[in-house]
Length: 75
Image (cartoon, rainbow, N blue to C red; front, side, top):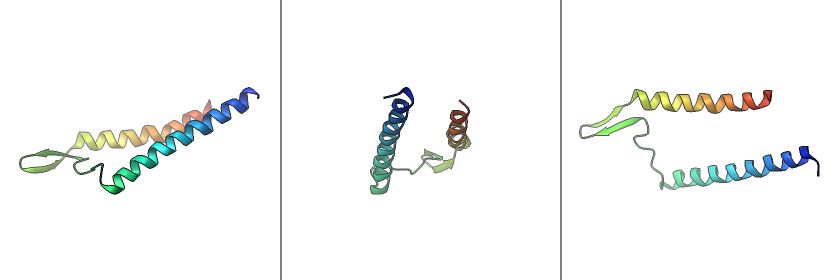
């Protein structure tokens, strides 16, 4: 087995594991075991208030996740 084949198999196995975790999490969200209420709002006694810092963190997460594949292609 060459080094490139080993790297490819490691990539495939790790991708499958990550996909399995993602499917488990999505399944729990679908069944209601993981609540997304208040994801972008801060809970307080008077109700939920939109949180700019949580929204910025969510957008930043998607930007970094989107840039990661672009970075790995250039290596």
